Amino acid sequence: MEPTELLRRIRQIEIYTEHLANDLFAGQYLSAFKGHGMEFAEVREYAPGDDVRTIDWRVTARAGRTYVRKYAEERELTVMLVVDASGSVQFGTQEATKAETMAETAATLAFSAIGNNDKVGLVIFSDGIDCSVPPRKGRRQVLRLIREVLYERPRGRPTNLAGALEYVSHTLHRRAIIFIISDFLATDYETPLSILTRRHDVVCLRVEDPRETETPPLGLIELQDAETGRRELVHVNAAAAKALAFGALQRRAALLRTVTRLQADLVELQAGQSPVQPLKAFFDRRSRRR
Image (cartoon, rainbow, N blue to C red):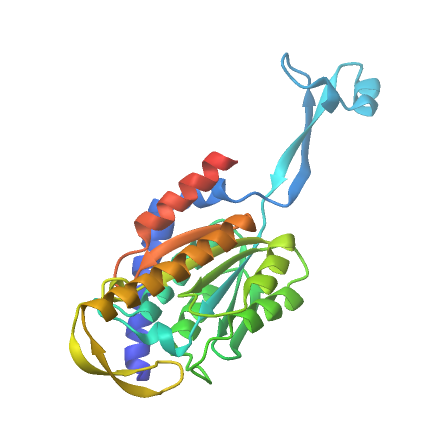
């Protein structure tokens, strides 16, 4: 991508996703994710209905009247975006590729995080770690993350999701909210995902292109594996199209079983479609669970 085109695309995503984060998700993000604990806020005079366990006996003894301690949720959180840049996410048959939809989703989440004074960081991966940005606050940090997601060129095509999860697990020492944005066309990631969910709040955002589950019978065509580069002539008749769709549904079901067992969250997104409604629905579900 040329520098002028990159700047134009960054500005376009900035305007669009900041609007979403501020206007649509402002309260929902805040209520969906808990802080790490409670911190002292103030001492005030007792009022009927206050919990007697919050009485501050030292202040009460000095003042001669009953006072209670009030606490507020410690709000500052750390958000880490783990974004797939492997060969398979470059695929797209709609208005946008899976990679472009992932970039829009990452930007929306990043603006939501800084809008609530949270830190946000980024890890981009393919067959290894292609980019790592430590969590920080502020608008400049979000613009840097958007630039990295759009500009980063992966060093390899294959997907090493397990390696990326292990890297995040080793580098994050405090509890964080981790958004894994990927098509999850990977293997052997269940164990590192399990380890990650023990210490962190994990949300898996799976991006899929409609053609992956609705492949038409195209006849004899040449297909290329996006992650190995291997080309092969394949006769995609009705039976083959059905088998491809069935395989995609099996992978989705396996991911859903894994996420459910680990008590993590799964958000499903479609390439070329806005992430607004799926994210709104997810934030609403999280708010109700709290």
